[in-house]
Amino acid sequence: MTSTVETPEQAALRAAVAALGKRYGRAYFTRIAAAGEQPAELWAEAGKLGYLGVNLPEEYGGGGAGITELSIVLEELGAAGCPLLLMVVSPAICGTVIARFGAEEQKRRWLPGLADGSLRMAFGITEPDAGSNSHRITTTARRDGADWVLSGRKVFISGVDVSDAVLVVGRTADARTGKLKPCLFIVERETPGFAYHHIPMEVQAPEKQFELVLDEVRLPAESLVGEEDAGLLQLFAGLNPERIMTAAFAIGMGRYALGQAVEYARTRQVWKEPIGAHQAVAHPLAQSHIELELARLMMRKAAYLYDAGDDMGAGEAANMAKYAAGEAVVKAVDQAVHTLGGNGLTTEFGLASLITGARVARIAPVSREMVLNFVSHQTLGLPKSY
Ligand SMILES: Cc1cc2nc3c(=O)[nH]c(=O)nc-3n(C[C@H](O)[C@H](O)[C@H](O)COP(=O)(O)OP(=O)(O)OC[C@H]3O[C@@H](n4cnc5c(N)ncnc54)[C@H](O)[C@@H]3O)c2cc1C
Image 1 (cartoon, rainbow, N blue to C red):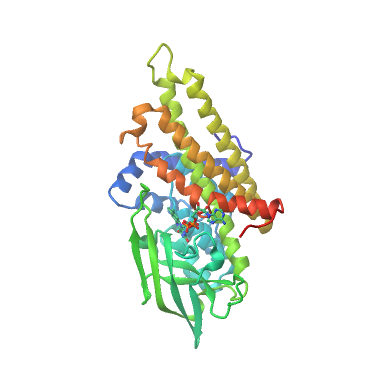
Image 2 (image 1 turned 45 degrees about the vertical axis):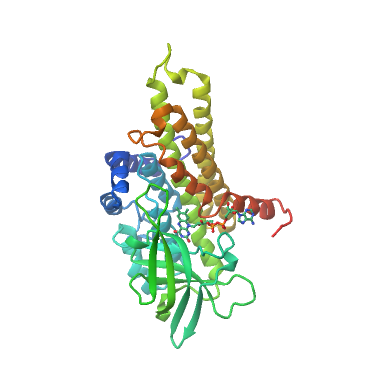
């Protein structure tokens, strides 16, 4: 499935990452997830080979390429059964925001480590009382002398236990106009007042989710990323890569599930022909293939626009790609499980556990309905009900 138009360098990257993913494989990922461990070897090797930081600037240890290339890395690892969810966060959101808006000191402190995988950064925007409506976030930063003091709560934040810091989205204390005026802070994990609690989830993945409690967390002035007043622009600079990478996560997982189902349908024989000869089995798999390819094409468009510097154009395409990929993976996994009959639910074949994993792409980082709202209002110009 490498039929999208790619440069020879991108195709070579895809092939090299696919080979790396294959060496680890699904069995590795399932084993470590079940043991509550981390894919540390894969993460370290991908970092060493330059894959994790392929989008980050060369002068800070990155590959100097774009989100297009980073999405190729995540998609191929996912297609091999090893989706590294933290790639959506650490190099894609945090790395991008720091590379584009960070101070020189922040870039030197964080980017080389994010690029080679030796440092990780989680991203916290979701709040219990705001949910999809990020305009309602109440994590508040107030100035105290040269410092910032940050208080609030976040939920579902991925990978905090293995991250060195969290890029926290707050708002400035005087932004009481109701207009979102976000600002971004790098909060190192061991900072006094910062606590995190594991939220047990039904998703079988090595990456865990956490509640964050920020209780008067005192931060030095240089923890603020970029301008206090340019928050929205900075935030979207990170959220577009997040949506594109979630699409890559979904498409990789969908390809993995579909590959398993196709292999099974080709070989499983209970009547005269293998079950894949029955159109009732074959057509839904063909449909899933088409839907994944279409989602991938939109993901490529979004990544292309983003890498070309068109943040606005990329925003619409990234939302659509995330939507399409989320729907395609949910359907592909469902159909894959069904194609295997009883084996679709066995631990040996390991497909049923992807059912919840696939749903993540429909819910996060922005739900299916919120993308439909975005397209209704922004693209089609329809009125808003909320
Ligand atoms: C595995 C996982 C990992 C995550 N990792 C992170 C992370 O690292 N960092 C982070 O900040 N967040 C993370 N999240 C949070 C995720 O982004 C949110 O769950 C998501 O944005 C939805 O918010 P919510 O759960 O509060 O749902 P709610 O906002 O409560 O929505 C519930 C339902 O109502 C629907 N709904 C809400 N408003 C409307 C409306 N106006 N119109 C129509 N339908 C509507 C939604 O579509 C949804 O189906 C993660 C979530 C999961 C599941």
